[in-house]
Image (cartoon, rainbow, N blue to C red; front, side, top):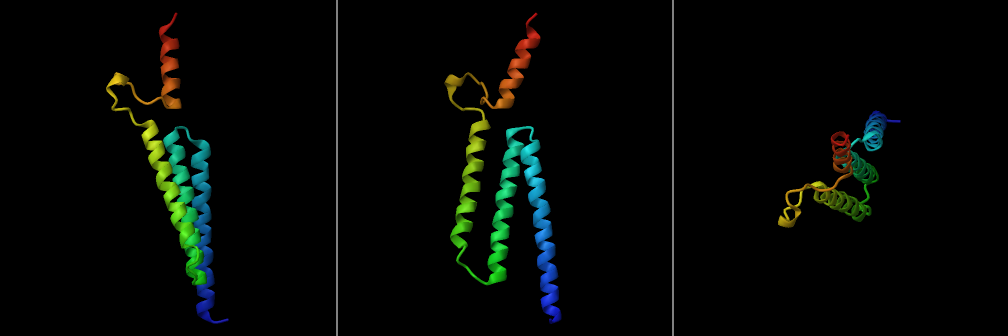
Length: 119
């Protein structure tokens, strides 16, 4: 084997190791939470890592057939982030009387406050 092949194999191995560590940390963020925004960041990292792995495989194979897969993964990540951001952002509807969105964390905080206020 030539030196270039050995170097390329070593670089690919290091990149795969780093991407694996990134994936494990992102899944840990999803599992650990504790808020929906933490879980969204973790899922964004998982999708981004998958996107990078597919792109790296395309580079190594010198094949562009997976470009539509990259577009779908990127679009899924963007739309999911927008959906979660809209769900946790306070509403601008005047009939809401200034109440914020009802995220699970918000409901838990309100129920704790109500319990502490009652005798």
